[in-house]
Length: 88
Image 1 (cartoon, rainbow, N blue to C red):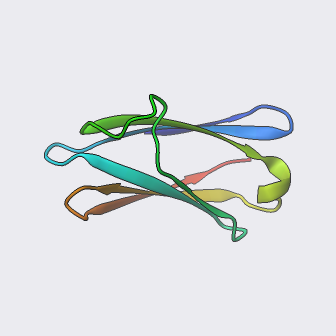
Image 2: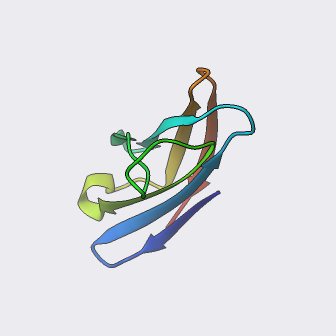
Image 3: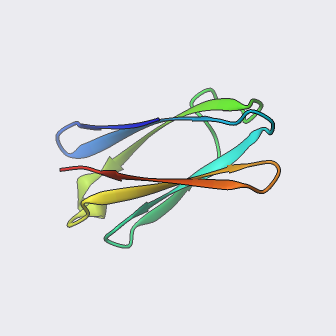
């Protein structure tokens, strides 16, 4: 599940990732303006579960012109799930 909130000079991205069999290994955000970042730690600071919450703030200047973000979520078994979210 992904939600995005406009917070003035930045956007906040809330992400809930879950897997039925493997531990979550992290995720990557790719904006359609070329900006990309990897989130190695969830909100609680420890990747230790099959369900993890991530929260990240992004300065709007870094994603100027972007209208979508793709969320790549990985698990310990090497599987990757991708979700594209439109914003603005």
